[in-house]
Image 1 (cartoon, rainbow, N blue to C red):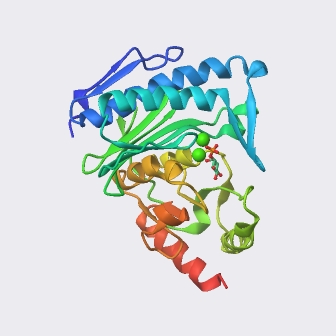
Image 2 (image 1 turned 120 degrees about the horizontal axis):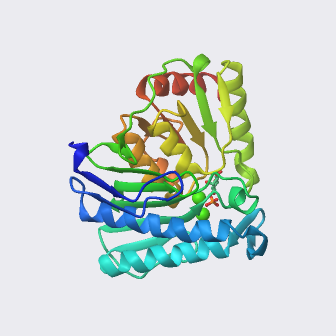
Image 3 (image 1 turned 90 degrees about the vertical axis):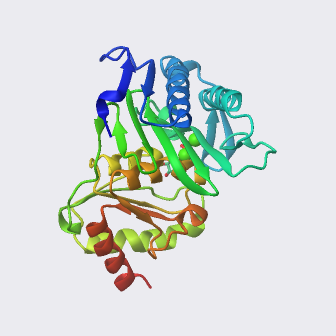
Length: 286
Ligand code: IPD
Ligand code: CA
Ligand code: CA
């Protein structure tokens, strides 16, 4: 892929990227990326006046804010305008009534809990699947102005740089991201077993960063060596999973099958570390 064919308009420390054009990527990828930038701008406006943010409860430990809703509105409107025949599944408003082999999965603000507490680790996530298989995705962190994107067969980028998973091949020196269950009690038993197993294996470090789509993007860019979490939703995974695969990584469920999209049980890392983690979990999980 010729990286010089990527054009980023207006990028500096204080000015977020305002528009991108990847001439070697599809129009769908460019639409998703520019839509994520727009949504990110809106999110940052809310972030700059958090004290006035309206927050609603959706259930136990589950919140939605005006920032999530406004971001989702911006994204769904833009995607529908360009691709009116595609199905859309978005976290806050659900699915439109369209049958299509193409389906957008949208998380308008991944990391809402971080966001409402003023912790700058959150992102917009937009993935496109064809016949339920992710074919492209973008994850945009508007606070750090980092845009991760990938398309099947075309590699993965963070802003204008090609990214690769890390080459760490031992649990002992690896840094893992994870997501600790906090909504559904029924996953905490098995989750604690996996955590105990990783700790007994003397895993280098474990982080709970709080935005699953960004965790996957961090695996793709080698910032994390691996990541695991249970009970994720398709909008958490769709974009991040293709970014991991296109960065040379491997993603599966903890039984090493590719049912992770349906089950939401995800393990992502480079292929060598992946095998070691799967073996360790299989040996130790009851
Ligand atoms: C959540 C975040 C969090 C993960 C949860 C997700 P939300 O998404 O990604 O890191 O642990 O499972 O639901 O609710 O902030 O979009
Ligand atoms: Ca999410
Ligand atoms: Ca969300």
